[in-house]
Image (cartoon, rainbow, N blue to C red; front, side, top):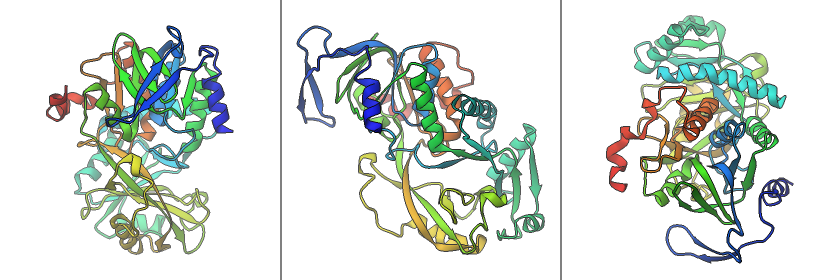
Length: 430
């Protein structure tokens, strides 16, 4: 039914010509090259859009949602929606204002407002407040900055010593030398609901979704030409939010960014006593900053699967997104790390994962996003490198990408997100 609905919203849309193009395929090069022979000029080509957005994950869907309120917008995805191939699937994500870098905290204020607006427009619950524990040593720079950012921005929070923490959360063993802060504003986002709500509203506001269409060619110009496995589209502006496939598309535009694609292991751990760490008992989300490993461990209260708590390591192994479905050996290093961690600090969980899933991260060297124009084609906008922490920020990311696409002054200082900070990594490819 999903495929039938999406095809109806695309191919049966009145702006598309009735005749089908004569399509021939060649398999040379990294992408299949599509030759379209048209029986008459303009047949099989749609030029009725102001903006095309490639990639219907949370960033692309929020961008398209903002754009379609004032312009004709097309949203393309290579897979039939909904799908679990990228970075936006799954039931939940953490939302928080506690950040190591203060500009994200500043952006999160508006994000909360826009998530609430989406809830109201779609009439669906997307945010649930649970609080977030940040656990680490007082001397750790990341822990200290997250704490000071909350204080400076007057975000409701508490600081807990290990003794105070043990009284409040007896089911967690926090080492005596460690401290905790509680970001009271934090919680969970129901990710799959959010994505569906955005795409449904996008259609309701007049947007067009063409899913199951892989982009095989992009030709820049005053009108950008995008060729998919189904047909050809032209628009004044193009926004690329293709997640782990970003560099594969940018290769067609003589640009490569320093993006690393990682396969992340998403683990669910069984509670020895059901409900011990449950959302209904008020257990919060958490981030555990450990000096012994490079990246933090995070978790959400048991909610998605009854009696199971999601706890993950915030990194993974290099992976090609087109090969993510290849079976990988278990247990992985990340699973072993978590299995060794849990008995020490979360003794109420079985240290063997009950469910192991996966998703993709697209990571920049500094863990900051890329929100910028193509250096040679100003009507091509790129949103990439969300580094495993972009979902919660999608409302503002989509707004900024919309502003860049429509020529408006961005609402935020984008200097931390400009690609020129990686000039030495991509200049030679231009």
